[in-house]
Image 1 (tube, helix red, strand yellow):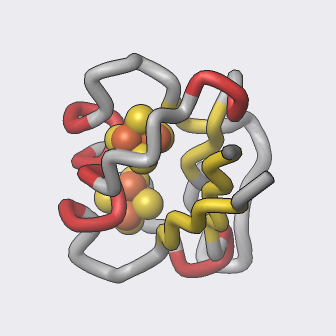
Image 2 (cartoon, rainbow, N blue to C red):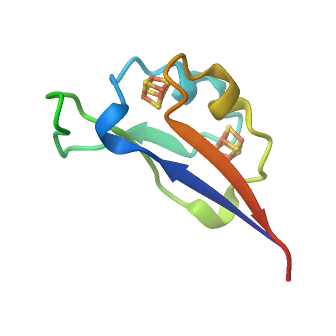
Amino acid sequence: MKNILVIDKDRCKSCGLCILQCKKGLLSLSHEINKQGYHPVMIAEPDKCIGCTMCAIMCPDSVIEVYREED
Ligand code: SF4
Ligand code: SF4
């Protein structure tokens, strides 16, 4: 089983709320700049994501979606 995070980078406003919610400390702001001029959030080690969905629930702009891929 694998958890997959899909981040709609161009809609991220770099507020950081999702970063604070990730108990695994996997999220951070990237160095790239999106279409709105913000640094979008990124996941550093996707294999460590436990699929808790807290980041997606917390995002006020619904930027993040979490999927679970069965083996
Ligand atoms: S689903 Fe949970 S573990 Fe995965 S990145 Fe989001 S908050 Fe972190
Ligand atoms: S909560 Fe949403 S808008 Fe804020 S940094 Fe995370 S993905 Fe971007």
